[in-house]
Amino acid sequence: MTTAFATTPSHARHARPGHVERPERLDAVLTRLRADPAWNALQHVAPLPVGLDVARLVHSDAYLRRLVEASREEAALDPDTYTTRNSVAVALETLGAVLAVTQAVLEGRTTCGFAATRPPGHHATPDRAMGFCLLSNVALAARWAEVHFGVERTLIVDFDVHHGNGTQEVFYEDPDVLFLSVHQHPLYPGTGAAGEIGHGRGEGTTVNVPLPPRTGRQGYLDAFRRLLEPVVARFRPEWILVSAGYDAHWQDPLGSMHLDAAAFGALMQEVMAWADAHSDRRLVAILEGGYHADALADSVQTTVRVLLDPEAGARDAAADAPDDAVDVRGLIRDLAHLHGV
Image (tube, rainbow, N blue to C red):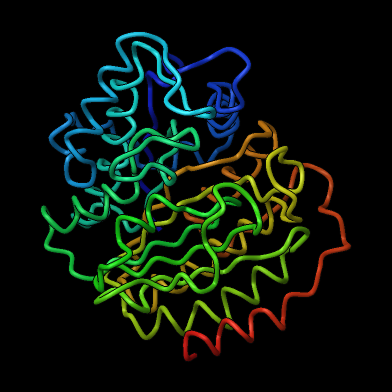
């Protein structure tokens, strides 16, 4: 497998002391990857130069004006989401990195890719910043691919511990984008209930898997295999975007799930199998959450190794996840019935 890789070189300029979404997150990831022989196997691509015109593919003019205004000084857009004087430039560089990996994959220069970027994006709605997110990176990549590559069927898989409400809002009435979110529930932002399945022409192309706290590897794999795999097969995506959040790791301070780095590797192997079956292996993963630096570095390292070699062993450098995970088989059966698979 050839794997494109991009990051946000200026990311440390978007920072607020004491905030959990901090530069040390990405620094830990990059330090770990650069020490791994896999680093030299990656096809490194530079962020594309993009401006606010690209952000308008998803975001309203009014929101972008507010974001630019807020970034003229340090500001709080909501209780969780901040800006500095450099935040718009960093967010656009992050988007440029995401699009550079997208371009490499859709042009056929690589089969898959990973964008190790910050700030994250899946909570940002067309009209609002929230949940540490300024621009809806995954949604923008999907729209950009439609415009520049004529993509007609996009699959988005979100396994961040928090529901990707922003991404869902963008595509809730869109029959050409299948959005799958596997997340802890209840938890911020409070959306992502099983009954949220899309609206109008988009009914049925949103699938939410709200899992209880302490769901572990087997519960996630059951959801991917029993529920999501047949939904994906029915949709037949042309390519796959992954909102790769790692805050479902058992060490993460913002979630209460029981995954480890090896489990994230196993989830990516499942998604890669879907890409092999339906999408000519075209897959782009984009970093979202993950707020324990070592656990995040372990998880991203494992993901990148799997992208380079789907048969690679997934190893967790930290202690194994707790083994008292809850049984969610009944929930998965109910959701499969709801979605007709």
